[in-house]
Length: 220
Image (cartoon, rainbow, N blue to C red; front, side, top):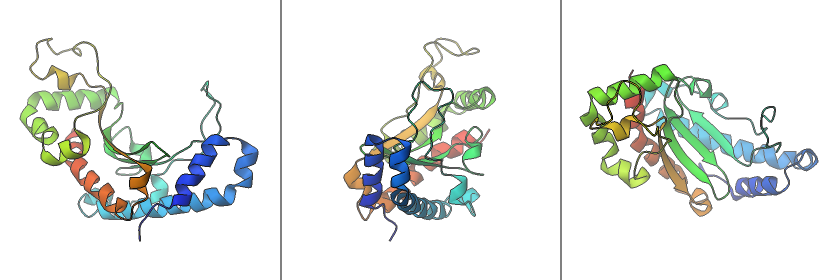
């Protein structure tokens, strides 16, 4: 059965409260168990998503998951470890997160999410997305107004510009959509939901609901 174990959530909760090198070393076996549980779950998710998003066929979980260690070189927050496990599923794996929209799966006590889309896409990609919305607004509106989209995400998420981007008039009929700097969708899940036997099915349903948005964003 593909299921996130309670011990995985408990480890992440304990790590948040004991975020130091000595504690982590003493609990490395628990970390390895949690990581294995998470990676087996994510690989099953990848394999299932690839049945309706075939570009992902053959993608391995190791290409999608992130390290537990935080990069503290340029951060004021010197916490050594993340209190979550995350994976970005897209063509070629997480290294291509600045090229393609995909599916992000994040397990964290009290803050677990299933989300996707394009996070802070580079200027050429962002410009292409805006141009496509300008040229095909009905297609984009159909996606974000669909029954499944609203059911799982309600609306688009992401930071917006305060004013119209360069090249677009302030009275553009779809300016509210063009002002986004990221095009994201987020489905929040409680710890109880994460631990349910049918959580895997929920992840797949949410992923199917976000695929039309990913397809739109990736066709540039």
